[in-house]
Length: 421
Length: 160
Image 1: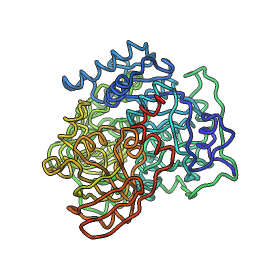
Image 2 (image 1 turned 90 degrees about the vertical axis):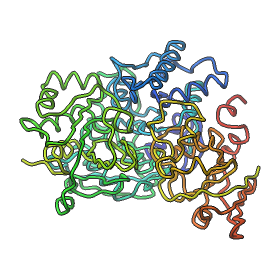
Image 3 (image 1 turned 30 degrees about the vertical axis):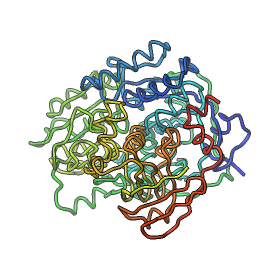
Image 4 (image 1 turned 180 degrees about the vertical axis):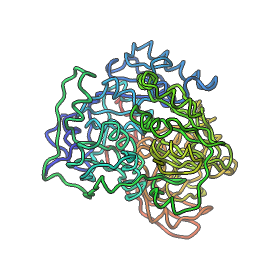
């Protein structure tokens, strides 16, 4: 039987000619990732179990992005532990305040992942790199420790759902709206244990930032990974970021899919996920017919939507305008490079003039860490990826997930709103 | 291996943010993590949980973040086994990797209520609801995973 993109990549990394759904394999890894929250647990396990070397000091990335710049003494100690581990094993890709960015924006930007790679990360949004045509999945800290020691991980070969994309997105509609629409359709466990494979003639109309955002939220449908077929957009993105050679795998015509879902991109409307699950979606048109949903905070950033084009969209919406009274709007460029580009091109000035604050790159508020925690009963519109109970602060606070355009438009009106032209 | 305990029951899509909120992830200390286990959906859990108790939930248990702190907090609380209709995949592998026993059994997840007394035989996968007098058969683990469990977790299994 034919194989999907994911299955072909896994077969290659397991040293097998072919694999089938459900098969348990050991695969060689091209990158093992951890952050300042998950790496300390991995380092403790690594040391406790007596490992004294890493498999490849160039294939481990330690990214201090969650509670940095260090939010408190405990967080500082966790980074200190990672820093000392990175020093001891001479880890090449150690990123800390000054060169750190949000891990899933940073690794693609630095060319550390290329098509057909096999990557694990002790962070659930490691699935982001599927946008580049890599097999990439989130694991826990023990898997990370084992990966750092051996360069391998065990996987159950996933079955797949195919998303056949056609058409082109309308103005102010983005990859975020597409993925929220999909999660709303299939549910938060709709792709459980499966890969989400994106293909079709509509692919060429999706920018790399749109794809990174969509693959990022594959986990929010329970998927093992999300993966995009490699095309000119991918090759153009990777060019100049790496000199590594890579193969490109396309799915076999007779590959098996549990479901094939057709998505006409031109029909997607701006979509918002209501508390407390990413599957609780409503289109902006449905929201327009409801009572106004007043908000207290807007967050534009994260591994989902903190890339340059996200900031550019938000800046277009707020340029020359001012956020509504009572709204705290926080913009977080995902990497130092994005920050610099946004600075040079005047986006940061636009944000500050609009009454927004600009933060250093950090995951901070997305997971209720720091830099924008919600008080009891407060509501936020956020371009992040999760709206679980207590995710951004108090257990009675609420998070509405949306695109940068909708988040920026909502900051201006003080309630969840479409872009006003 | 067997377990016997009182059930703490939860619903669908219990996410790792409510199992252990991120605001407590500035530590990797197992006891400290356990002291906040389930805090955002069941404030009283840490006071009522007893060593050997069993956690039962419905669909997609442990969804969301990959934080291993979640199964660590549950294990350190004294929970002997988590039974669910389905598990989110990262939680599933994390639990196996750290040696927290888990069982997938939709029938048990639906029928067992909070406070029920439950017996588990891990060798046969038979779950007995002592309170109701019902028996359920859980999915057995594949051999590959049994080996990781029998060797006491992933890192031990790598040492051969």
